[in-house]
Length: 363
Image (cartoon, rainbow, N blue to C red):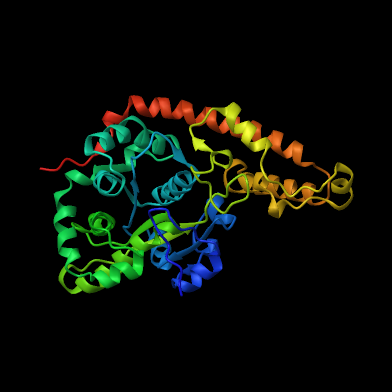
């Protein structure tokens, strides 16, 4: 029986190869894209759907769009959000019309957050945070889900094309709030095509794939009427917990790093992180460490070290015992300190300009 992937967070993808096969994904090939970013080059991006279409748009400079959503339910974000923004920024820099929707309706229906709370959190933190992580605010279009009547009207149209059994098969549950959230998301991912039919790509973690599958199923059923192009998608792996679990989780704060977070607390967590070190210094000097099992090296690979040659040197030095785990943890602390300071400075600047952003005005 195929394991349900739950976009609301109750299940984790434990085996990425099995996920690719089970859900008919294409294995990601970074050579398809010009100047692949860090997480594309290093296998953190591992799969997608219809990526050749997007690669062709980039190559031939054809119109396409990239879109993601913000779920404004907390006052912090995590490293999974960071990777979504990095991929969104990649496509933005390669010609994509870029959209960010604030999923305030979904937050209200699935998380119990009022529309007013969702708006305030988005404006005060989430949108500035995405800009601080690298999006070009002048090239990004924003809107609030609750204000987009076109999306809501189309969601009701789409709902007529989905059966209850199909919804259960995709999501494993059929809670009314989640049903409405899911069909509204179908409207969101297709929204840029309401006026202009063009390919689009949605960068997400693999836990969000049910929404993509539902959107593509709906498109196949309404294509003759609306002419929508099925959306493409690109998937990144989870950032693992510092304790070694497959994913950072708020339920285990000792292995989780938020953005932002007090750097002293972050360094404490890094120094307690699971590594691939041996039982003694002498043993590690003699036979080397195991960077492929080290959460510190994983942070270097996914987030903290941009230069591939530098990363490879760290791998080799660890593998041969030239460098010890304590040294890598100290380096990680220094790099994380630089990253957090840079993020907070950019966040502060973005907050001052949030009211100048390009929000769609609906009549």
